[in-house]
Length: 80
Image 1 (cartoon, rainbow, N blue to C red):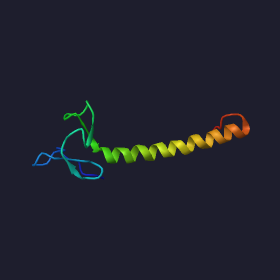
Image 2 (cartoon, rainbow, N blue to C red):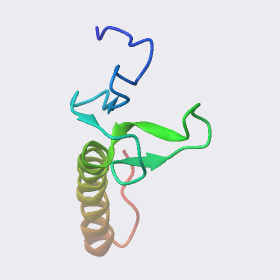
Image 3 (cartoon, helix red, strand yellow):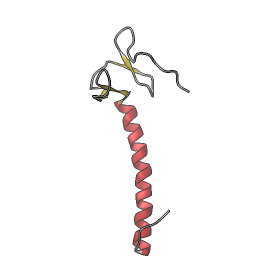
Image 4 (spheres, rainbow, N blue to C red):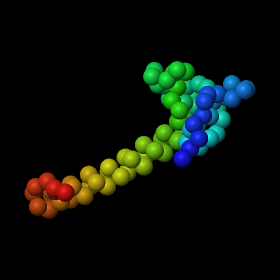
């Protein structure tokens, strides 16, 4: 279990990514915008978010490919 961080900012006003732990300057260059957060930036850096979304997309892509092959073969959608 990860230890909860009280403030995402350090003493020298840098913000840390909650996934990789690297410190960045708090700007939209390193963090995506999120209006629901106090500082208006996400908790994960753009690189980590990109990795997460790519992994998710690839898993869904293979799922879609399987279903397309089954549909093309049988002519009906695959049910699981």
